Image (tube, rainbow, N blue to C red; front, side):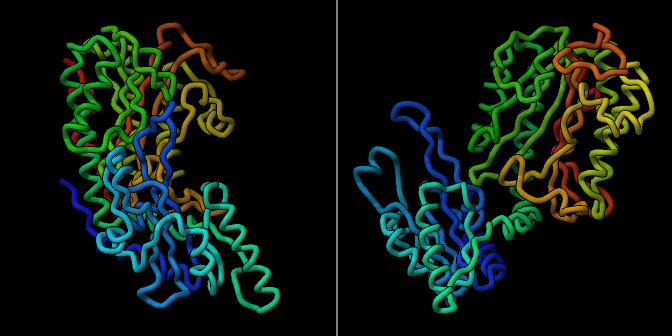
Length: 441
């Protein structure tokens, strides 16, 4: 059972406060979201708030006051203890718990935020806050900022701008610590084992919904919070819909099943794996040809995910192999460079080859900084997930061959979670098998 380690969050706060250098940051927690009537969706904490606090209740607000002396820099506003509310909705840490268990220098009731926020912000050089994301507190922040500007014009002190916390936090979160890597190993291992369960059980299943229940039930049995995102359980032509989540079609032995699913741990670290398997135990000739192209592209792209490379290089390695493979079987024609430069492949492959992975499934962090690619560094984790999707949904570009009926309805994606290392990237999801010999029975 995972137990919160406050030292992890204290170290992050120290780094963040040092980066702020005289600024005051306001980081709100997430709020509950109504599902229907008087019911809410399961609570999911704001990732930046969690990253810095480890506090998993809604509607809290954290202040990080780098202009204050030590012992006055981390302030939490939380929901106070309330016996009646806790009977209905569950335990609250309250003000005392925020200080004792979560190491806030000082905690207050969230009801006092508007009165106390100006006092805490006073004296900071700038305000750090995400405009447009937190409407319940934004008006108060902007009012304080307006007053600070007036003070600066008269007295020469006060905040003169508002910055986004992402400027500081995105890079911190992009490079994973050893602790984070180990947590993600667990999330990805559980996810991989769930995919293996699907592989071993596919012969006795007859509907996509059964696969969803199997894989998400396994996540819960293993102690995960649940699925990291809406599981994609797509058989046959459904696999050509990239974010298909209806998950309620019957399974046909002649089709492939694309499963894109990963779990989220109790502390929000995620896995994200895709496997495509033959429902009847054997690939058809056409299915096998497409699968081999995608697998070759993926393996080579993974090998390119080393320190000093970048995400565009990883994508381009996969893309070139996909295009050349599709040319060989007559689904594309022309110069490889011309096809890529003009996007003439996008009716068959319409997404990038991967994304950062961490507290968010599509995790924070830049891929480019202006004209420059962000170089891969040790501790980054990214997905590598090329695919080919053959259907009539997107018109064939002028000059490209029409699609023979024998190819239509084949949708294949293979996705692994990769830890960047100096010379050889580590495939964290290797336990989910993907070789043809392992998928056929």
